Image (tube, rainbow, N blue to C red; front, side):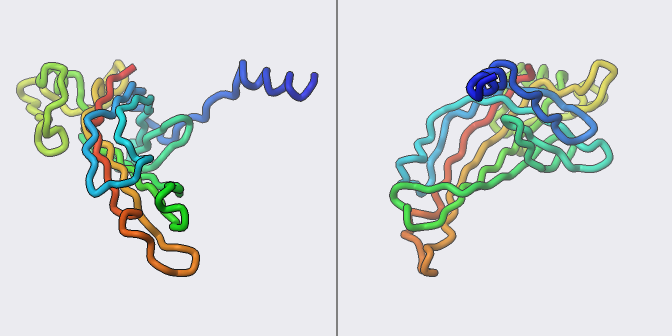
Amino acid sequence: MKWWGVLLALTLFGCPAPIPPGDLAMGQYAMSASGAVREACSLDEVNGADFTFNATLTRDSSSDVAWVTLNGYSREGTFDGQVVSSQAEANRVFVKCAKCSTRVVETITVSVLSRSQNEAVMGVCPENALDGGVTTKVDAGIVPPGLTSQGYDAVRLCGELMTTVVALGIADGGACEPECSGCTVRYQLRGERR
């Protein structure tokens, strides 16, 4: 088989996706990031356009460690029983800051809603989902997300995705231009179980 035949076969059939870490699958979600609010941002490449993606949430059942897996890459975070939070960062070059070493820090924070919590908010993410907007009233049948006989009870995610550009300095040790640091974009983050 010629080299391009091998590449074509890999493209068509692909390799199996790696299994996300953790011993408890919380679910796969179709995510949307919208309603961007830009703060102190003059970098053209950080435009704040709406976008969608898929995410898988998993966790370690014996601790508060959780993972958010995007495109086969798992990033570690925490789960407090209601909220998953995960942060990742990567180098990025911006036109206005080409001489400056910069990183983008991305934080995903979502409240994980059980079926009964989702019904209590009528299937719509509350404005303050990360700050008391998701209730638990066990005696009224509104229970937090958790493992059931049908799998993990987590049908909706509501929260925020925040990206911040951080300037690390220029090669000669000098400071970067002021616009090369502090650019922050906050998105409303919504997810529905697939």
